[in-house]
Amino acid sequence: MSAELQPDLCVIGGGPGGLAVALGATASGKSVVVIEKNALGGRRLTESIPRHVLLTASRALDSAPRAADFEIAVDDSQFDFGHIRQQIAGAVAAIAPNYSQARIEAANITVISGSGRFTGPDTCEAGGETIRARHFVIATGAVSRRLPIQGVDAVRPLDCAALSALDRPPERLIVIGADPGELALAQALRRFGSEVTILSAHALFAGEDEELAAPVRAAFARDGIVVHEGVRISRIEPRGSGVRVVLASPGYERPVAGSHVLLSAGTTPAVEGMGLAAAGVRYDEAGIETNARLATSNWRIHAIGAAAKGSQEDGAAEWHAGHVLRAILGLPGGNLRGKVPARIVWTSPPIGWAGASEAQARAAHRHICILRWPLAETERARIERQPSGHVKLITTRSGTILGAGIVGGRAEELVTLFTLAISKHMTANDIASIMLPYPALASAARSAGMTFRDEKSYVQFDRLLAAWNQMIERQAGEFRQMAGVLSGKARRMFR
Ligand SMILES: Cc1cc2nc3c(=O)[nH]c(=O)nc-3n(C[C@H](O)[C@H](O)[C@H](O)COP(=O)(O)OP(=O)(O)OC[C@H]3O[C@@H](n4cnc5c(N)ncnc54)[C@H](O)[C@@H]3O)c2cc1C
Image (cartoon, rainbow, N blue to C red; front, top):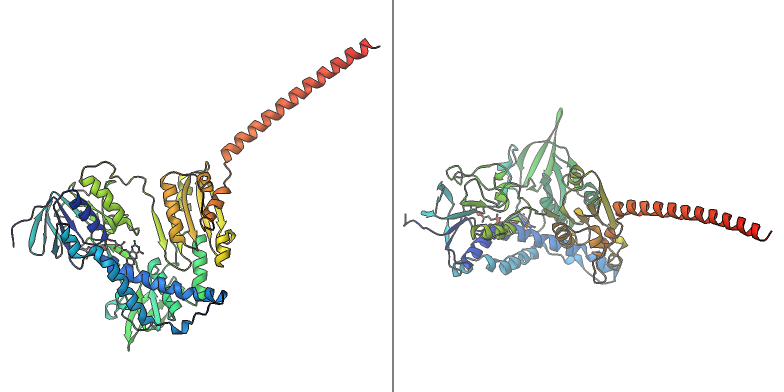
């Protein structure tokens, strides 16, 4: 073991989140060590980018019929799944330099290969080195959740890496679970030609707003995806070159045969085996406990991204990185209060949601308003011949936006408008008065905003109107009385 390293900051986990903190800290003059047990770049390079290339290819294939609407000949019989492998390799190669060891070391950061493990409140070991640092950041992300199903370890489930090594789409894919990310992938594979059967204990998209989830379920049915909800799996068995999943029903068993299995059980924070107890860091299987500044129960250790409890949203790690950096550098503004959660389900059509759900808004407010607008009513949708989907805004009685979502169109882009609007406490009227270039799908959000009727000002207006009527009636009575008096006087004068 070499001499103890004593940096200002030690980051455990060299994914996008950990590297963002490390690069920010070194740019501010801090000495930094990064510990990574696999490869720098984390799951972004190995999982997220391959998945997005596959989804993008599926969308491109999807748009072939629309090209035909414009009499543009697209021959999808030429579609070559093997070519996607090259596309994935190309995308990863284009993005990998952002996370390369050469770039990180050129920024004066020491990279240690190995698994980081705390041995005390301010000490960690990795790759034969001891690191005693003033600050630590845990950025270990998440790992796939294990399914407690008999035989699951005897088959080799597909992941993005295995999928992108295939020459053709899986012939008969069995998806176990209902994680929305994997469901999007399964739908893409169906569109590439795989037979897809989903086996889930729960309803698909149960965590999404029901009215936004319904069009996605309908698209799955249209695509010919077979869905079995509420099922219990008793075991999984290898079967020749394929696999057999046995469903347990009362009194009998039902086998489902497939060529491949995709586990869709979501992720769990990567916190095991890190010596967190030795460091005095409180955690459980849901992640590491942190305060609003992402500090753990040990003041010198912060946790970011999916490792921190309640931070499973995509994009959390890099957002947290900026906040933790401010806290470590002693700058103001490193507080997460006012965070607007946002998420995207990358299905076709996609779902985007920002802020509170309808149920959360109802629980927190006595009166809420729900505003909707169909995308089909925008001229952009008509030009593009994309009729489905709608925007939904949830506001307080006075119009402040609490939550907003969209199904269809470019939900992943439009949701950023809602995230900003909610974080800045904007109202439906603010959205209604945005100037937009023509033709924009975002005009559906503007139109939804325009449907808002401010109940408070309506009540005030009604009161004003009633007072106005009373005044007119009173004055009319006075005029009638005066006219009666005058006409009496006139009659007497001219009698
Ligand atoms: C299939 C798939 C699709 C995804 N799609 C999206 C998406 O669309 N959008 C999105 O924002 N996110 C997506 N994600 C999540 C994405 O991977 C994360 O947003 C991103 O990688 C988060 O970065 P991170 O730094 O927090 O964690 P990670 O990228 O998970 O990096 C953590 C790193 O820590 C290392 N590590 C763990 N434990 C230790 C230890 N004890 N010692 C040393 N090193 C350790 C790991 O090897 C890893 O390199 C997807 C993930 C998967 C699996």
